[in-house]
Each structure stands twice: as C-alpha cells, then as structure tokens.
Length: 570
Image 1 (cartoon, rainbow, N blue to C red):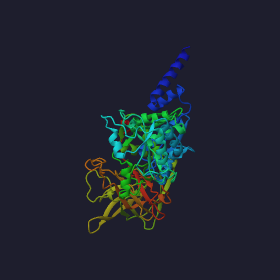
Image 2: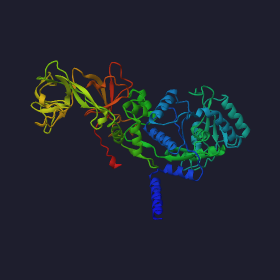
Image 3: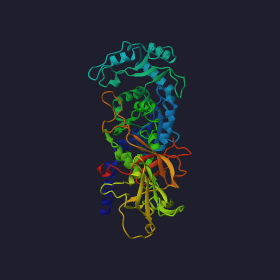
Image 4: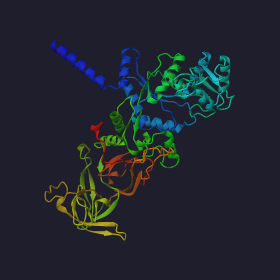
C-alpha cells in the first residue's frame, strides 16, 4: 500500500513539475484538449511577403512548428498576401527557404491567402446582406477624421445607412473596376463609439488596380489584412492562432469577422511578446532603405539579422533554437543582448568545427637556421575538445607568416609574444627566438628573423625550458590567401538605433573590416559556401556564398572567441 501511495505521490509531483515547466501557451492548449475544445492542434506561421524574415520571425516559426510537433498536430506556412503594393515573388521564395532552413516543417501544407479571395468576396457579400457592411465614399483622410481618438468616439459615415441593395450593387461595380482606386471602400458596420478603435467600422475592402504575384490581374479589389486574416485561419482549421502582442487589440475584430460569417470552431488567438535584440535593425522599411542606399549589399548582408543574413554569416538553425530557448516565451516585452546570440553559436560550433590556423594581418617570419627548401608535415588535432574529429598534417617551412600584432619591437610589460631576444612556441611546432627584424622607410616591420630549436618539437616529449607565449602561423610556401571580413554592430551602440531628431539610423562607420591578405593553412582548400571553421585565436568563420569565387575564398567572421554573455545570468 505504501508503495502505491509513494508511486502516486511521485506521479503527481512529476505532473506538477511538467505543468510548471510549460509556457503559458502550452498550458492553454492543454486545457483546450482536456475540455474537448480541440481534437488536433493546428498552428500556422503567416508572413506577409513584403520583405525578408528576421530573428523575431524565427521565434514565431519555431514556436508554432514546435507546438504542432509536440501535440502531434499540423503546421501551416501561409502567406498573408493581401497587399500587392509591396509583395514580390522574391520575398515568397526567400521566406520558404528561410522557414525550411530554420526547421519549420510544413511538408505539403503551403497556403496563400490569395487562393481564398473568392471565399473572402463571398463573405463580404454575406456581411452586406446581413446589414453588417456598407460601401463608403469617404476619402482615407476623412475616414481617419471620422474615426475619433482614444478619448473621443467616432462619428458615423454619411454613407453608413445605404440600403443592402445599393451596397450590393456598388460592391459588385467595385469588383468590376468601375470606380477609380481609392474612391470607394467597403467597411464593416460595427460601432463608431467603441472604445477599441479597431472596431469603429474598419475598412475591409479597397479598390486597387495592382498586379498580384499569385492572382495576376484577376482582381481589382483586395481585402484588408484584419478582415482576411481570421478568414484564412478559419478556412484552414487553425485551432490556435498564435501571434505577437500588437495584435491583441485586433482580436475583437477577428472574432467579429468569423462570428458574423458563422465559421464553426473558430481559432483561438493567443498573444506572446516579440523577440527583440538590442541595437539591431529589424524594421522592413529601414532594411529596405539600407539596401536601396547601398549601405548593405542586400537583405542578406551579414551585418543584418534577417534569417538569410544570419545563415550567410554562418549561424546555424541549432544556435538560433538555443537562443530562443534561452529567451523563453512570455507576455512581457523584453530585449536580449546580441552577445547572447553569439554565445549560442559558439556553444553550437565549438565541438563541431575544425580548428585551423589563419593569419589575418600577416608579416613574414624567417627561420634562419632552418634548412632551405625543407618542408616537414606536423600533426595537429582538428579539434582538441572533440578527439573524434581526428588529426591533420600541417606543412612547416623556413618562411612563415604570423600575425603582425604578435610581434613588437618595444613591448610593454607582460607582453609574452615575440620581440627581440624573446622566445615563443609556434603552435604545434617549435620554439623560435627573435634575433633580428627588418623595417621599411616608414618604420613598419616587414620581416622578422628567428632561430629555432629542433629539440623543442611539439609532442616530442621535450621537458626543458618553458616559454610563456604561443603564437599561430602559416607556412608562406603553402598559404592559401583569402579575404576575411570582420564585423561589428551595424548600429552605433552608444547612440542607439534611431536618431530621435530626424528618425534616421545611427550607423557605425566601422561595421566591417576587410582583410584582403589573410593567409590560411591549406586545410581550407575546396571549402564550399557555408562551410565554417574556427580560426585559432580569431573566431569562427564561414565561407560566404555570394562573394566566394573559384579563384578566391571569402570568409565572414560569425563571432569572435570572447563572450560578454554569462548563461548563468539568465
């Protein structure tokens, strides 16, 4: 008996722990399932194809897809393409690629709001027949004026009481293209005195002669987002319409639309907080401006945080998922530091990627007592933290390249790298001691001369004198010259993203540093776009897919090796 009670107590305790660990959305879904309101969970990600997705959208994709998987349900990718003014096939294709890459498994469940235009039109006719919609001739400015304010109610349009017959006739003629763009709209008839401005007879259709990316010139009237969106969810059988907090005030209108159109089992809308990152640009119109002005080289410029830009820079889906898990899901708006995202990519890559030597700013080092013409191959571990990645052979010769910053003529105290008379270890190789150096007319060091001790070879068991400094190198004879790009924040972090006076962006003029003479060991030869490596002491780097050619590799630095983010501070 005691064993049964103990087992029961343990089950209750485990259930309580699981309930606490679930976010508030999962708790709502659990209740809906338990109370019989939901048989199969259906979620969706509904982007507008008017730009590229960014890091905030990644949270919505992973959340919606993750919930569908967790509850054995379905996940839809649906384009809310009701506004052909800004929509392009380019954006549709990029979004599909981004959703697939980040792990949004929609299989054959790809939908377009534009495929429902016929049903939306029929729904508008039903609203007119019920006396719940009317054609209005007010201009956009007049509609705004009539709407009222947050503290003052709106006033009725002079066209509000048109008869059902007149509204049906006018709406049909709108569809047939008899009226100029902007001359008439169809409005829902709700309540001009509602405390919620969204309920003050919102526009649900407008005249717009625009070619649509999916329907071509079939329509010259288009539904407004707030009318179309709940219909799309209802048609697809979405059970939980999960969106961000700015749509909370729109929920009463969504509910009104599906209720008046008498859809069975309408979706339940649940709002969560957006994912913000400090000092980054996510607004589509701002990114578009950066692209058009040539500040960045496209929507996928590695300094941006669009999903395609993160992929191009070298971030992985796993690192973004880790980031979202650390941020969590809540109802309270908050911002995460970019350092947290960099922490996640370091954690993901540190055991997966080979570590190789690369010299970003090379200066020649000549070992004067090393035999001329001799080349030997030294063994190095591909990843000391993951022995399963094996080893490689690195060519070593008389002439090497080292980092310019690893040599100083007159160093400060506690400088343990190379300077006249000092001895250091060349990583995976020998001890070398500086005996001389050469400078040009401006005093810049052009060559460092050293001697080496052949008894000090790495892994030889040498146990004699010790040195405090170890530096990396690349054989000059075998070096692969590449371009490496080092990134800083696109935004001036001290000033913030936007200038309060004129709304312009506070851009960092040093957001990218291009190292055109970077020398890398031959292990990178043949590397394909998106392949990534850890360049020892310099950070994680990814082969750029856009600028790399058969003749020259271009690398983007994903993240440096230093982190200011402390995971325990979460």
